[in-house]
Image (cartoon, rainbow, N blue to C red; front, side):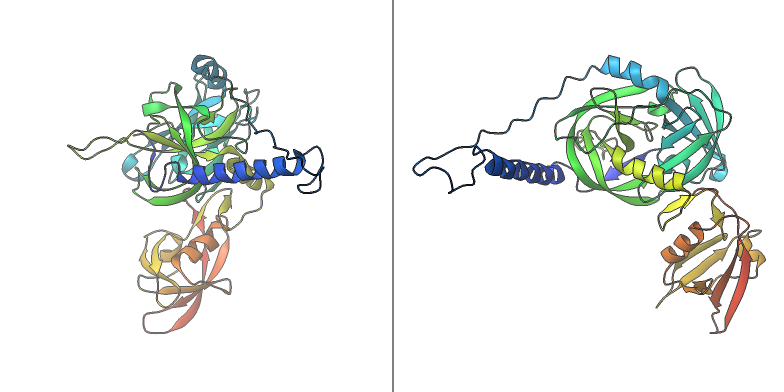
Length: 373
């Protein structure tokens, strides 16, 4: 089964249009300031009117899909994330960042995986992979390939200079075939917001600031590369839309969505620093082994303590409410997840717990190893 977000939401050119208007206004302002032979308006020679020359952006060079595909394929990998519920697995893509095997991919490709296997597109070499860290909100993860050395690394560009209608190539493991399949299209939005649906676990994640591409991106290309005409990586493929339409309705044009590479590399640098944040998890994932929901007026209600995992072993039961972790107040289920996500397996946490009958207690729980959340 292929791993893919389905993107829905206010895409289209609106966000990109706003960005374009801002850029044009800034350019015209600079022209007004510097286009008058060094004179400010109203302070030049009397009786003379001066008109600033219009600013024209240089056209982008045409994109040669064959050449770009040939150049980028050696730095792409196929990812298989296995041991999900009921033995299911997911296929996705990744981008080699370093010769010793650091690989950039989408978080949802490895979400919930106990084992991750990576194979190089260029020669089929297979590696086991460890998740070094991830940011679920940004849909970015960083992997490390065991025993890798001397790998070809991608040339990382910048998404800051992208413009509407720039031609780009989206390439990855389309359909889980194992081949690097590329599709070309033009950027239709520079700042899109979508609600992405994970086909594997049906979870939803809002993604903001993403690039929208008029191209038939497909399942399996998640985590793959979005490149410019020079072959530099300018984005990480995250989602697709337009693949499914109700019977009898006209299909919308297919679109792809990508995380801008500048945003992705900020997450990578944070992971490499070894310093976790509220959204960036570093290293192996820890788990309490509970299903939780928001409690009113505050706290995280335990809906289920899974058998054999830390919470159940520590005596926590469904209906109890977690109100603190190590004396820090927990106001919601999200706050509890964030607090545990900064910890590591085998760490001991002290949970403030409120029982259904109003009794309060503190429970010490030793966290276990879990899967990437």
